[in-house]
Length: 259
Ligand SMILES: C[S@@+](CC[C@H](N)C(=O)[O-])C[C@H]1O[C@@H](n2cnc3c(N)ncnc32)[C@H](O)[C@@H]1O
Image 1 (cartoon, rainbow, N blue to C red):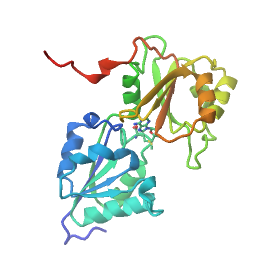
Image 2 (image 1 turned 90 degrees about the horizontal axis):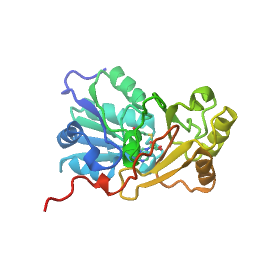
Image 3 (image 1 turned 180 degrees about the vertical axis):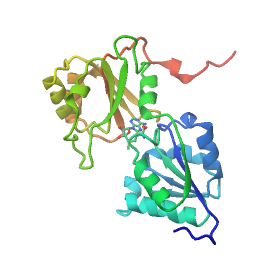
């Protein structure tokens, strides 16, 4: 139970976007500037943290934070502890906080501790990848549905209860998060369930970061590429009736300078 003698803190669960600091929302930047403490994941670090005020305490809680204790229960305990001490806490999560971000566990912990919170939505890496590749996620007539799926369960393998009929639907744009390692197995399953191997695919690595890489290929081509690829960066796989109407290029740099 919260101590009524303590000032009540507040937790803002903030979406950091895919990495490009310009894809942070105005609300996210404001919350960072107001925060006393920022708990951030590996993928929600870098220059977005520059928005935090000089006095803010920055705490890395991602997998690379170097502590086995940086597990979910530890993160929950930190959130609750800092909030109960009356601090303004930002919990910074990559992309959109509500997509494969273990948001639910934190909401349950905060609610259980009686701590007020808000969720600040943001730009998921899926939208940023499509935009970087000059690609619409939906297409009139041919892709009336978009599905976001994970290629890894808690063990790191392809989830066993996977819905193959949905994944092999040729009229859907599918975005696979955390799927680089398991994609060769996924692609074999997709073929078995009727998806043609020459279905267009995009591999989007480190979207919004300086070393961003986009590879246009097919489901079979990507499976082949992933068989030997070393996974060093976050990456997304998109496949389906993808339309590549334009070459992504310098047009992504924003408005040209005025003479
Ligand atoms: C734990 S999930 C978090 C997803 C995040 N909430 C979002 O909306 O983008 C991490 C996975 O998201 C994808 N991802 C996140 N940021 C990315 C980026 N900048 N470029 C490519 N993929 C990214 C990768 O598949 C990565 O393994």
